[in-house]
Image 1 (spheres, one colour):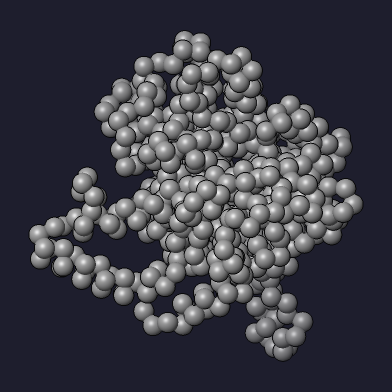
Image 2 (spheres, rainbow, N blue to C red):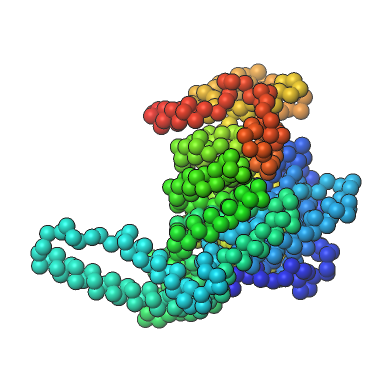
Length: 585
């Protein structure tokens, strides 16, 4: 299967070396509300993004140099760029090398440039290519063994045992029909499997993957492990050339009466020829994940972790790692930081994980999490000292407003991670960029990171302390005014009515006409930005085992960060969440 990230790290065809073409320039425009103001932007970090997944980079319409320059011009303090497959490690490596060269040459003196943090690792969507055998089995044997195991697990999970059923002719008939159907299904799956294998890449030994991964992490001292993790919903997609043939076959099966996407089951019909039936067994994902995380522990590197439909498996994995790599016997699992990126785990689940594992951080993105009805509850459930923000977007280049999609469960509006997609929206975006229309949006990573930060600031009651060394303080679950929306709305309406009666619609604002509520919101945003900056420093810091975090990444304890009333209390948060659910709406 062609993942599209196999192009060289050098300039693409038609590019002008390291010079950025006019249509991809990132000169900073006058400030607008969709990007953070400079005094906040310099505090923010996009903790997770995939700029090397940009379709324009894969189609050679731009180069890795242009992506690098766009990243450096982003109005953020730092951007953490992920890798995900065997193919795109080289692209992240190329950007990290350019950043390292610029830092070493001192070429950035006199100008503020965004700090780039590289991350190397293998995403669960791609670990089917990794063989646990060394040397790997032949390609066909490797994938047949891997996907046959998936079939066996599915059969055990879905098929209802008939041992306890009462014997009857009807039951015998149903059993016979089930066996015939199972045989037919097995034949169909085998045929599909053999067809899919033709498009899959040659397997690579896990030992070789770890060797390359270690070399990359050691080459870049600021690098972390990512994106790695577990995914129980992902199905391997068909490459574009296979989709066309499968769509044509579906059209023929319908006797030409309708196109596959024009029937009543349009989405299901499309998925039938865009996604295969096969998933990577969880046991295989766990083996690859454990090997990568053990390497991160050896090198004391932080981890960005993907977890979709795998809350229980993720919790079990954390407990397993705590047992096999305990603190006190060298570097342990608890000595590195783990970020559950674009976290979709429930609020109670977040509370439990962060209570059990003090090294687990949580980050959210508008790309993924704003579709969740319980996002506010999830944000409130987090320990504010272990909260991060991210974009989880796959382009740093200017583009028209759009979202790349990939039809993969909870992360369907996120990154395609290098998988080929039907080109309609992507081709239009490419044409827009080449034509240079005025609708181009710059800094997509900064915009999306700022959007989730604003969402967090509206949920959490974060405030700056008064006086030197007072640190950042925060309230539990946004305080009472956030718990009672009806009362807050009534108070706002009363304040507006009073303001109108006095002929002052700005609610006693300053000379700039800013309302008091707007000023309070801006203050919360600034306070949250400071908190997130401290969190990011601690997330990347190599803490001394046994030392307590002070919120500044120093590895020493401090009493200045919060007062006792605002300490994170998992039990209190759980009780508050239950109380909220019991309250009438």
